[in-house]
Length: 125
Image (cartoon, rainbow, N blue to C red):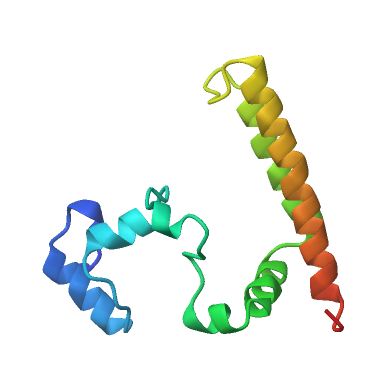
């Protein structure tokens, strides 16, 4: 029988899995909530997903990201998301202003990724 049983599995099995991989989470619910929308105002301007090592050296996160994804792949993924958001019948953008906001965010995210790409390429930064 598998230790992993999804969200409806027993907490004891989940805790054994965490112990096996030396992960420290108070409960399965905390793990799930931490990977969802951040509704804690005191954390709005704080990193939530970085490990202790990454907090000490954020360049580790940048290096890891660009080891996993090429710049063109990131551009394509961002573009696909943006097209889906502004053109899909299931879109979260129902009016023109919302669509404009998402296009603006897309442009800023692409610029940010390009800047981080350059930082990753340069050793003097």
